[in-house]
Amino acid sequence: MDRYDKQILAILQEDATVPVAEIGERVGLTSTPCWRRIQKLEESGLIRKRVALLDAEKLNAGVTVFVSVRTSQHNLKWLKQFHGLVASIPEVTEFYRMAGDTDYLLRVVVPDIAAYDRVYKKLIQGAELADVSSSFAMEQIKYTTALPLDYA
Image (cartoon, rainbow, N blue to C red; front, side, top):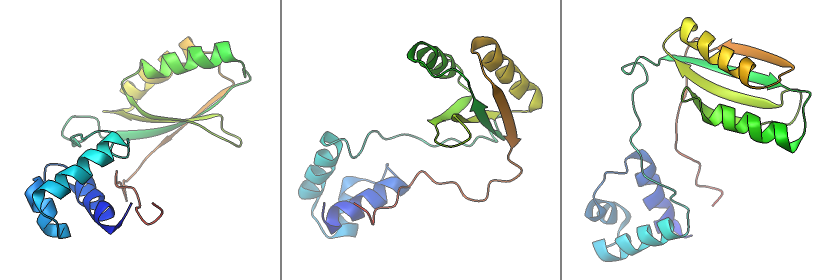
């Protein structure tokens, strides 16, 4: 990956709707080589997909809850069941298996506490959990989907 690829990725991370001709102009390439580079980045899997980022507040999903889950179950059957359960809950927007005191960390977006309570009940009814701890975000200070490109 060279500087052209990094510049192209930086532009696409900010706005994937920028026309190829404009991207090429901004990075110092003509349209055709710029388009080829974008295609290679997509084929290699570096660009996984292009999406629209929506406004959670305007969609009435402005409450973010971070849910820490601990379990005493550490077997493949439980793991598959829990992963299936979490995948079926649309309010869970991120899901991580962790090292340390927390086994799993979930990011949940909902309109209010009552909606979160419904998600919570789905979680505790659908899987054997040792502990569930919820933290409500008071303010979003930084949010980005852009990845740092200096390490590439």
